Image (cartoon, rainbow, N blue to C red; front, top):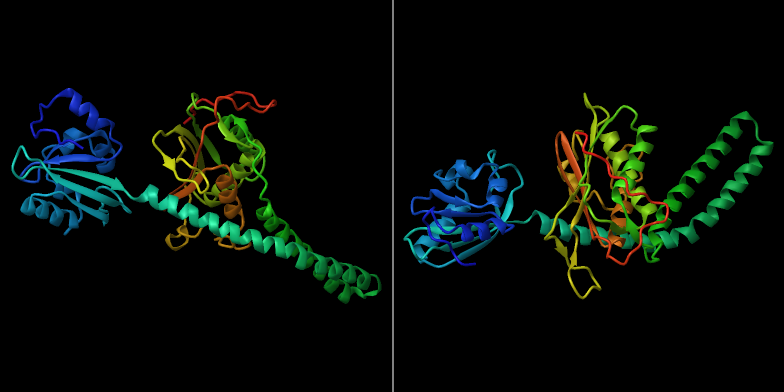
Length: 382
């Protein structure tokens, strides 16, 4: 990257180029004063460029930040420095700000330098997504084994309980009914796990995601989310997603149900559905020769208490749940379906705000939409 001159009256073309960079970029002078901040830096530091420029970089960093030492090292050695996984979290710019940092001196002015921040969150979440897929594959083999080794004996146990019930007294009949109920419960659990063993290719079509979300919202409002307020923040120009409409309904129904349950105890339970176009997100998929573009972002947000921090790394793993009577397979199945569609799912959660975010590929021009799907798009209502 060519470094711009320190003067704030530099060419407009150089400023335009810097503002198109998707990483935060700032320019420091010899006194550690910020002289320029691109648009991404404004989002990153949660401040406008007019507020940033003229302030010391120290004002936005935690006490004894390693970045200060890096700046001193670059000034002393006069050569660029890269540092990875630097924690610059602070009350001013927020928690969990783990970044890779590139600091390079500006030859035209002594002591001046350009700093580029690259947030680690997206790369780390993609890495976790690969782990989630591996966990789902491990359940696939387990499900195939359980279907044969457990369901057949359970049917015999249930049949024997039914025969005993015919000649049992009232007290013993309660026990035989308990046996039948528990065997049915185990069979239902095995049935859920057998979904993971379905390795057939996804039958994809060009799906209007807003039709999917509208249907999920209607189901939720007539059932488990009667007392929850919904709001929609949709991009009406969003292209079709390449997917299976029924499976996508299953994904978002699961996410919306979790969100409604999570915020059910809030004073004003609220679930927000959002769609957006995010160019520039690419992912290397095993078996694909090229990196896949994932420009479509769909999110489900709630104002519940949040996911415990020690659960966030494992929430898409099978049998991990915070629900008292949950099986821990719902989110694992969601991750599998999203992965089968070539997408990724990740979660950001703090007390009062949890967001499940799905990134997926757009449908190619030759892909036809489902015959029954309309093209309704919801207006932004909140």
